[in-house]
Image 1: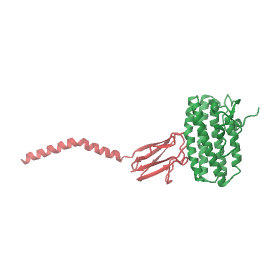
Image 2: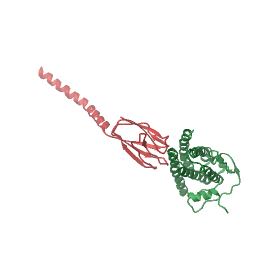
Image 3: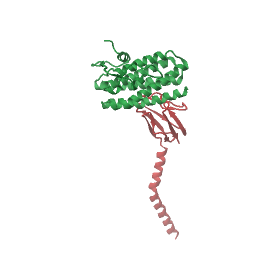
Image 4: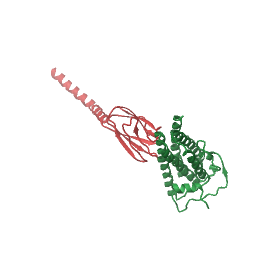
Length: 203
Length: 119
């Protein structure tokens, strides 16, 4: 069996192996919609399919939330490699710092609950979209890269915040997972406000 | 007569002293309390510095504590002082001796802004 892109990405970047391992979820039904926008970025190609986010269970929601942060950290490392704009670099460093802190919190919760997050179609779409976005952005440099990076970050955070507020937080059954998502939401909203200022400044 | 007047005067002085004594003592204690430097807590929570603005007296100390999951800083807009990175649960203190209004922010999250008023 070939590992799904999301599973490989997450394995490479850091989910701890638990006794239960990372469950591979059979995806029966795919829909397009809000989730696809997560990988859409600033005009990035839309992934082929995305599982209906509303049908995810708690372990799948945890996987998506963790993966979403890993994707943003990946974008940030690209920005640090390619940008010389001080404000862009400051934002990218903040993304690494904040998303790492949130993910550390998520891992601590999963460890406490002795649970492993479940890979799923939404996570896979995120990873696929991120790969396409990175391929697109790394062809750029200077102001063109900066403009693309901040526009992508704005679209990404808008989509993540929409998904958190409309779907993940209302649907999470475990009280501690729900509480963690509620802690993450204002953080990501602050990121959205921060980067919207950068987008406006570059116009 | 002079003797009587002196006696009355003495009684009056004693009466005033007895009646006003505690109040004088209270006022003096308040003055001492005002003059004594104090430490004021500023909590960093939900991406806000609280309370904001904070009014203090010169010589007072402010103690910043980060209650958020993400790291923050408390940094003077003028860059005169900077807490460096404050991770969750960490505190940093600053004594302020000069009167004036001081704007500060978080270097990591530029929309987090607040003000200290030193009297």
